[in-house]
Length: 154
Image 1 (spheres, one colour):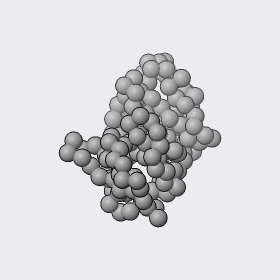
Image 2 (cartoon, rainbow, N blue to C red):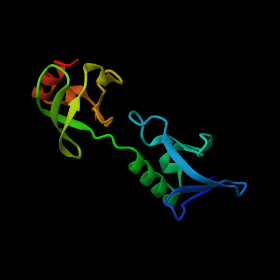
Image 3 (spheres, one colour):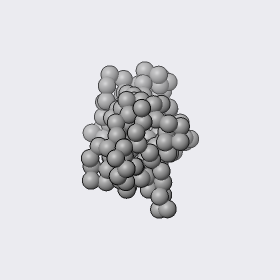
């Protein structure tokens, strides 16, 4: 049973009212497993970093609360999924990569091979020079050309 409520204040920040009626300003939703299980393990955290509410599944939240939480997560999390490598400017770093993502085509600069991290067997995270993280959910699902380009950096 849900014993809390969440709303936006006049400044657009999330405010959580707990079961005791205490209001917590500037609440931040945080995913426990943003890549592996994005809809599971959601924590609503106070502005001083203390967990106020734990949701095993986002679907367990009431519809209005879920919409607010999803909206806030969407504003905070920007991780485009890399679908295809179109070209790289050079095989030495730094190099400019032109890629196709789930949000369209873009280019970014890869500073060094250390900015490509393996999260699991076939999942990679690539950081560009601006700190934007690009996710490759399944390396084996990439086309042959993309894998061949990427192999030069792994």
